[in-house]
Image (cartoon, rainbow, N blue to C red; front, side, top):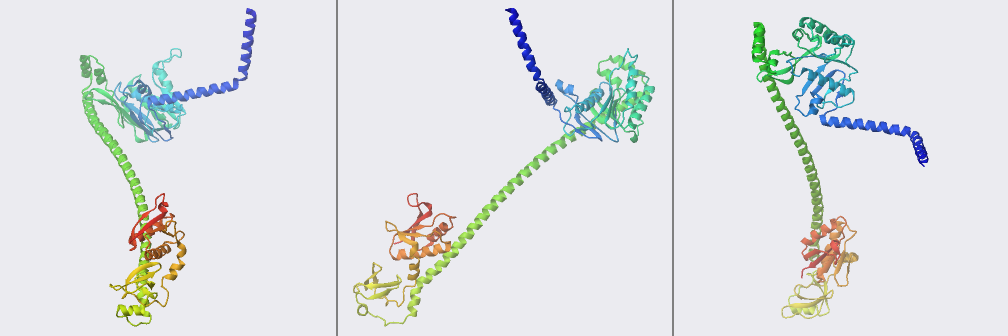
Length: 542
């Protein structure tokens, strides 16, 4: 049984292995994809922890803004950042300054930024940083001593410097710490100057640190060398780790010894060994350092004020842009409202003109009977009620100026002189002096009323219905006037005006007219039960 189990396990493993062998290509692709994803994730996490940025690759300059050492940033300590600028005229930065002042850290920060950029990583600097894509880097940092190669510290250092002379062009970077510093200062300075001159002729970029005094002078503008020093606060006796471009720095061995706690008596003895000229020189350097420190304080304060001004400027520009947007919006809104108001005024002006036109027609129509009367042949003037009765006995036709049409006499004048008459089924009492002989022609408005009769009809309750739909504003007002005339003469109490909705122009015109009409007691829009807002109900005066 155990043999059978082993055989079965071996068979299963063989089957699984054959199956996985067939899947080798996609598994390999997946593995490579996972590696790439893991690398990208690691790069992103590292950049996030370092608050790094992507540099811009250029050929003619190095500009590392607020560059920092990645390890110091990751340690969580407060890091002093420095800005390094080199260009095609000043390609070699020669750093000097106090011992333990930060020269080597700055050199390594520059080198790490260049190497990280070459590897596709974000660098520990501020946005806007630029540098070339260096295809090769020569580094002489630390002790390269090799017993197997029979090389001393200084010999190994010289080998690296000599190899670096083969590099040429803007895409080569040299990083050299303490150039030729491990030998006689005079001879070391001579060698160092020769190497630096060759590097300058080869047009490479280089960052070099040194304590050699002869290297701090004698460089012309054509040399391509720019000095840089790490600041030292003479008041506190501590380095500030701030880069000062353009001037060399002092090594300050005495101050460094005092700072690291060397016996004060020993330090005083060392000062006594210095020449009077050197002692005076150190005092002058202390004064210059104090002045330089004050200048840097002023510079820092001005930079802070400038940043505050930039923030205020950005805020002001943002407020101006917001104000301009709001102003444009308000202007557009006001313009639209003005356009609507002008359109409404034009519309009401048209309605007003139409109303005035119909008002004039109303006056003409009211005066028309008198005009007709003056143009018809004159009759014998009636002086007394008796003469009236003789002239117009019951059953005779007379003209009633107040209603503008003929009527039939129904009886004799009473004691007040009033005569009963009948006009269009209306019984009226009119003084006999008002009545006139019947007209020879028809009522001037009768034909118009006959032609417009199709626009009105009565509902089941006996109310006059005036349908103004499909008419223009002017025609609607004309028709409405005629219908109100007729309704008033017939003693009707209420009129229903149908104007519909449309663009509301007829509705507004109708209601504006009704508000002015002498016939109208009041008007109101229709309710859901009485026709909605497309209908206006008119109550006439008694």
